[in-house]
Image (cartoon, rainbow, N blue to C red):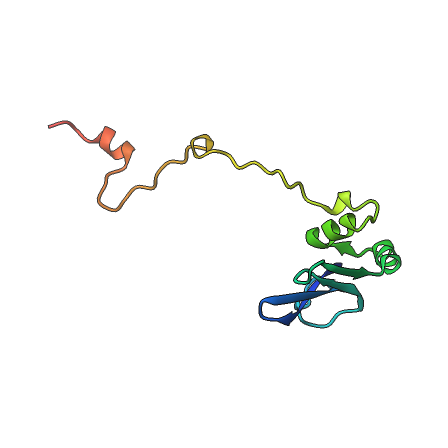
Length: 121
C-alpha cells in the first residue's frame, strides 16, 4: 500500500521534512517513489512547498496520506482531506468506568471455589 508521508531530513534541533510517496513498509529514511515537496517547521515563517497536482495524482492511484500530512495539506487549502484525518477529540474512559476484571489468584492464596468447598473447623 502506498502512503504519502514525511521523511525527516535536517540537523539536530532543526528539522525539515520531505513529503514523499513510499511503500507502507519501507523505512522512513529509505527508498521512496517520488518527492512531492518540502516542509520546514523550524523556519519563521514556516516554509511549505508541496505540489498539490502530484498529491491528487497519487491519491487517485490509491496512495493514502498520513494523518499529519493530511492536516498540513488541509491547512494549505487542499480539498477533501477531512476523510484522511483521525478524530482529534478522542475521550479516554475514566479509571472507574473500566470493565471490572477479576484479579488473578496468587500462588499461596486458595481459589474462591476451594475456600467454599473446604470444611469449617
